[in-house]
Length: 212
Image 1 (tube, rainbow, N blue to C red):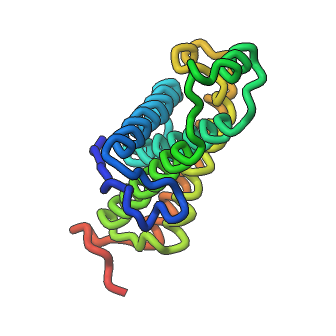
Image 2: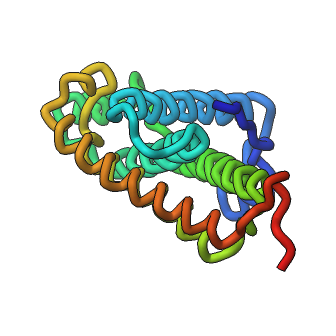
């Protein structure tokens, strides 16, 4: 599988109205948080990819895009969970002893999630654009968008089946059977949308788009 990278999505154009570090120390703190969150959600997504059934009718590029959508979904849920009050005993203790357990600045957390969301979305856009370009497909066409939506829907459906499972417990999760059935059905749909996309933009034997 090819490795794809994205430009750093920390442009101030993306941070309008959000927290902007005032000095180098604050900037490094935000960057560290962003790197940790990035590793966390990508690692979780890769754990899901590893437990999907073998032989799914999707290619390596689609698996890569699927992992990015899974990471984006995981990031969103982490953000939602962080906004919810922690009524557990541990949460109550941390709140009572806030001078010992510093509370996360909501503005910093919001900026961290916003930057990572932009980065993941940029990688998804780039990966889909590269695949379409290499196959003579208009990435903005309806067939290409339908293909991308099919991968996103597969990620959302897979996520809902295994969202509460820790990575180390995924191989033995009781939801594995249901996950396999859902993954096979939706992977078939992704394949169908890919074939529709290719038929909409046929190529000649040399790989160049056929003349109209």
